[in-house]
Image (cartoon, rainbow over all chains, first blue to last red; front, side, top):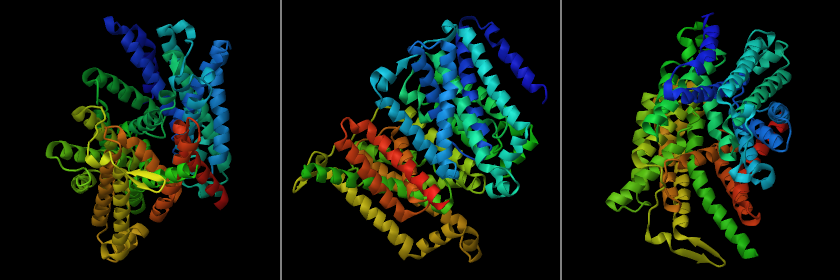
Length: 308
Length: 286
C-alpha cells in the first residue's frame, strides 16, 4: 500500500476543486471537519502507543483554542496567537504528565478525564472579560476567513501531525513506545527510560492536539466551554482511532474520513438521533474487526492490536 | 447557621444513596467481569423510561416500577451479554470499553429517535410533601429513594457474602481460572453478575425519575460520576464505593451551599477530589 499515502494527499489537495455545484461549500466544510477529527485522533493515537489511555484530548484541544482566541482578541498578531495554541497545551501537559505518570490503565484514564472536566469548569468560572464564561468568545478568523484557504491550512496542520506520527514510527521511539505498552517493567529492564518516554509522548500528543484546537477555532470562529472542552471530543478521538486501527498512522485518518462523512450524511437524513447508526457501526467493528479497518489489508496491524 | 449545615448534610446523604446505587453496579461489573461498562448510564436511562411509561400508561407508581425496570434491564443485559460482551472478555481492555461505548450511544440515540430529546417528569402525590426532622426538612420522594437504595445495597451485600451464589461470584472475581478449576461455570456467573449490575443501574434510573425526571441524555453524567467513584474506591472494591459516594456527595453538597455561585464549581470539586486522590495514592505507593 505504498501508493495509498501519496494518493490520499492528491485527493485531499483536489477536494476544493471538485465540481459539486451548489454543494461545493458544503463539501469543503465537511472535508475541513474530517481534517480536524483526523488530527485529534492521530495525536491521541501517538500517545496511546505507550499504552496510556488518555481522556484529556478535549482539555488540550480547548486550551489551544482558548489560547489562540484570547491572545488574538488582545491584539497579538494572528500567526503568533496561532502558535500559542500548541505551546500552552504542551506546557500544561508537561505539568499534568509529571503528576500523573505513575498512574496506569483505567486510573490514568479517569485522572485525565477528571482533569479535563476541571479545566472546563475553570474556563466557565473565570472572569467574563477574559474567557466569556459559559457563553464563550468569538474568535478572529485566520486568513480573513477564506474557506478554501483555511481548508489548505487545515491540511498542513494534519500533515504536520502525520509527519510527527511517521517520525515516531520510523525511529527508535517506536520500539520504546511499544515496549512500554507491552510491559513497563520489561521495558525498564531493557533499558528504556520509561518516565521520560511516556512524558515525551504525552507532551507531543498534547501539543499537536492544541495545534488542531487553535486551527479549529480559527475556522469555526468561536469557543464555548461545553463544546470546546466537551468530553465528546475526547471520546470521538479514541473511537475514530480504534475504528480505523490503533497504533498506525493510516488508521486514525481513515477512521476520521469515514466516521465524520457518515455522521454528516446521517445528520442530513435523520437530523436527530443519527448517532445510533454510528454506535451500531462501532459495535460491529469491535466485534468483527478488532484491529480496525487497517487490519483488512495490514496483517501486522492486526497482530499488533490483538497481541497485547 | 447550624440548621443550614444539617440541611446540607441531609441533602448529601440522599444524593450519596443514588450515587452508591448507580456506582455499585458498575463496580460489580468491573470487579467480576473486568469490563468497564460505558453503557451503564444508558442502562440507568432505560430503567427511568420503563418506569416513566409504566406510570403514564398503566398508572403504576414509579417506586413500584423499580421492580419491572430492574427485571427488564436484567433480561436485556442477558441478551447484550450473550450477543456481544462475552466475545470481548479476553480482548484488550480498549475493545471492551469501546464496545460498551457503542452500545451506550446506540441506546441513547434510539431513545432520542423514539421518545424525543425533551426531558420527562412524573407527578406523584408524595413528591410535594416533605418530612421535617427538627431543623431539617426532607422531601418524601428523596427520602424513599434513600431508603430503597440502602435496602438494595444491603440486599446486594447479603447475597454476595451470605449465599452460595455470592460466594461463587466472589470466587470468580478473585481468580477466574481457579474458579473454573474447582468446577464453577464462569460464563454463567458472568452472565448473572452482568444482569445484576445492569438491573441495579435500571433501579437507580427509576429513583432518578422520581427525584428529577428522565431524558435520553441523563445517563452520561451519572456514568462519569460512577466511574470516578469506583476509581476512587479502588476498582472492584464494593465497600469503598459507599465511602467514596458519601465523601463526594458531601463535598458537592457543601460547595453548592456555601460557595457563592457554587452550582458550577460543585462539579469541579467532584473531579478535583478524584484527581488528587488518584495522584496522591499513586505517589504514596510508588
